[in-house]
Image (cartoon, rainbow, N blue to C red; front, side, top):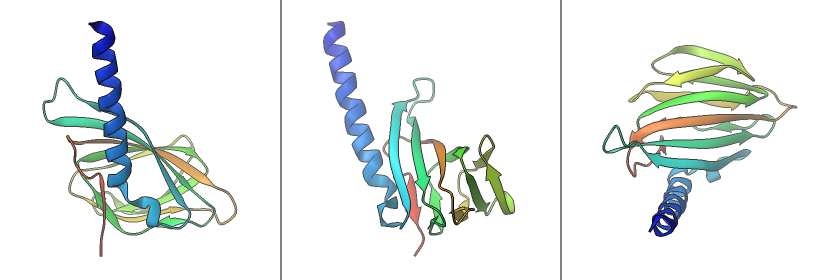
Length: 139
């Protein structure tokens, strides 16, 4: 029984990761690579999930203006990321080991590698509705 439950859980996680990957749509962004890390439903918050995504930027790469479902906590893993969010003030450069928060309903105005010679990466942790499209690019 426990083995069957684990197998079902593994299948659900795999499907969730596939859906997360499809929902991010960052593949169209030159120089940005997105890799889903995990998705888990929050048992203490019905209808919400926590999702972790690794975003890697080539030197000088950037993402177009966008917004996210729910709230996002970002931790810079390597390099330096220039970010500006409509709710948190002017653009700022965050270096490896630093973090920033994007509240629900805000717009990500700038998201780019601050360096033209070194790569940069970040871990984005989303708390959003189950099955939500996590990133939507502005037109």
